[in-house]
Picture 1 (cartoon, rainbow, N blue to C red):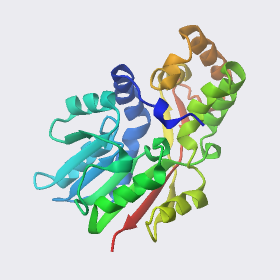
Picture 2: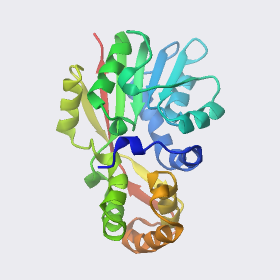
Picture 3: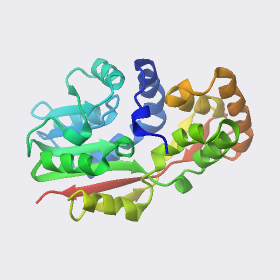
Picture 4: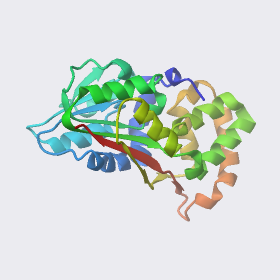
Length: 266
């Protein structure tokens, strides 16, 4: 798989993430993750690996004026976009494996589709648990396996054949924690007892196959690996391979499922 550190995208790529990935993919999951964490009025919430802040913004809406939301990310480009989108949230740059917060600082700790990219996942989960107050709630979302994202499986296979395994690994990296038993063990190894791993069905929606490929390339490290001609050629081949997912309007809708892992701290 691609090294997690490679996902240090530029501010331009972070803008693509916010304007394209959030409405197409991530925005739909902010509500379910916030529900799983039971975020409510007055809570103090930490979002780890917040990206451009779609989950943190949903948390802010739920905690109200008496609550507080902190979003932490290692990536300066993501945080710059997040701060412009919502200045009322406290945005912090930091490492998930060494959170800059005291023990028991938060009522709720959440993380949405970031754990896969943390170099030390056990340390990162342990840190989330450490900063959670007694009685607090943890909710972490990761993508299920590529087998539950068939359109992406097709894209990964085509990319491997055309552009090599290094480029394909970038596309496959989000699905690295897609084994349910392995995911449960990861939480147990991190000292988080009685974590519940629940599969949630979802989908991804883009205006066209070409737009899907453009966003996947421009919003990831593939932007530095594939030329514009490579991207156009990839899109043409994918238009044929992904035809089963294309609506009469030209829009493409594909399955994309996730696991949400929850735990309460006694």
